[in-house]
Image (cartoon, rainbow, N blue to C red; front, side, top):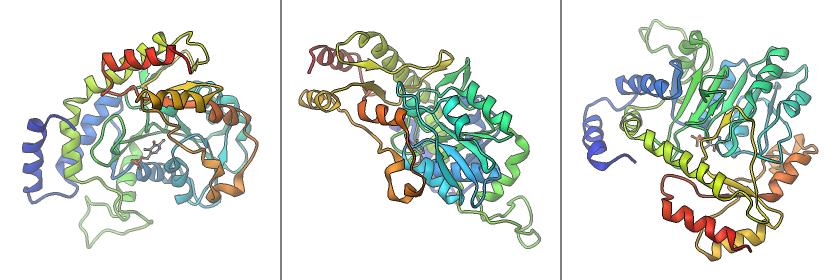
Length: 354
Ligand SMILES: *Cc1c(COP(=O)(O)O)cnc(C)c1O
């Protein structure tokens, strides 16, 4: 949360304004968030999952279509594909960072593929250049799940500017939070009007209520003025927060190089990660985890590979890159709360061995 004295007067004002649902603060938040991610075409939602579902609808994905995606992610990525009635097709991941590769995505494209969903796992940008080329050859859009990648860059440009759709989550534990919320950056401004209908029961709120026609299924997915107000105040304070994640991540990149038994993630030269967490790779992951826990250092595997859930069972296939990454990944903290002393301590404990 931003500083109390900055947030609470604004929050109180909106709570007692008589206008707590979607209004001016939501529109203002969309505009200002667009400046942060370098894309003026922003739609807000009540969650990142809702934003992803809407992106799939706007991309023309429907029942029975295939969407190429990754199993190395949080469940919402692939649940949104199910919400759209579509079928997730697992592209394998790079064992060096957990992201899909252009080659693994291209190998999954078929006549029924209608979109590609790309996750920047842990904030490391996936190789968007090659993925965009594969998508273009196939004539389908790319939807980025950038829930971990606010503040990341690829090819010198902010994540938010590269694909047809880019989703950001503002859920409680993401880089920036509005308690809950999701933002969708769209390439085509002509889609915004339909997007606003999709997020509000199919209703065009600019038209007189008794004269308009609802022509497609819509959802109750909009953001409200209360969450948007938290977001507006957050934007005044978020830059140093993002910068601290990135500074900690870069510090670990240098400090942990060469630690025996530890492999660091590698990535596309064009990628500049936002380090939502810091992933290390280790053959003795259990031993490493025990060592860190014994020294009071938080560590986790964060996510279960999605393809082993029974809801996705019908689509299982061999994923050797994922097998290797999943067996060796461990995430350690590098967020805004990790100060200089803490990161020194983490590196020192890792250098001691386990
Ligand atoms: C958090 C998260 C989401 C969904 O965000 P919500 O805002 O909680 O709906 C989607 N994908 C990934 C990878 C996430 O970590």
